Image 1 (tube, helix red, strand yellow):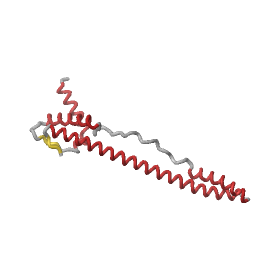
Image 2 (image 1 turned 120 degrees about the vertical axis):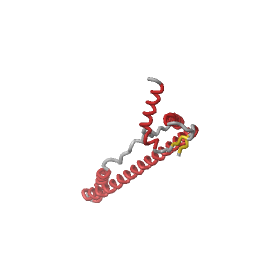
Image 3 (image 1 turned 180 degrees about the vertical axis):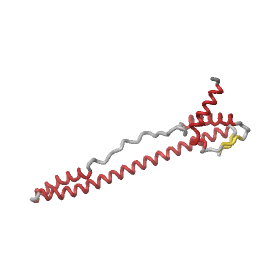
Image 4 (image 1 turned 135 degrees about the vertical axis):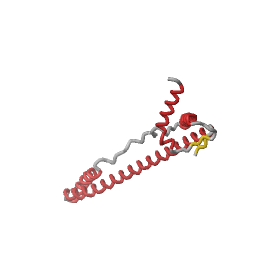
Length: 163
């Protein structure tokens, strides 16, 4: 296969992958009479250069560092709290003379507080997940913006108007 055939095949491959994610971001106009083949070659070379400069490739899925392992709320917040409350209530009830009644009151109170603690932990976890997603989105936007500036600079240096 000739070098020009390899280049055309490579350009076609990049245009398939770059398609909507790259082409929709830019309007590129050749101001020095460049033909379509030259423009495709320049776009490919500028894309490659921009990826090298920024470390970001908009044609590939973006991966951040893996998020910290999810911490689950204590299992059995309601039941665990009820069991602890019943034990504590039984001791208190035994001192007062009715261990069964104390255990029942302790179980109800412990279950209530255990459930509240679990819901609070779940809310904290959901907020942390939301914060990670927001940070990921901001990081992605920043990297894309940096790539876009590099890509635009390269094409403008080659005689194109880029908007």
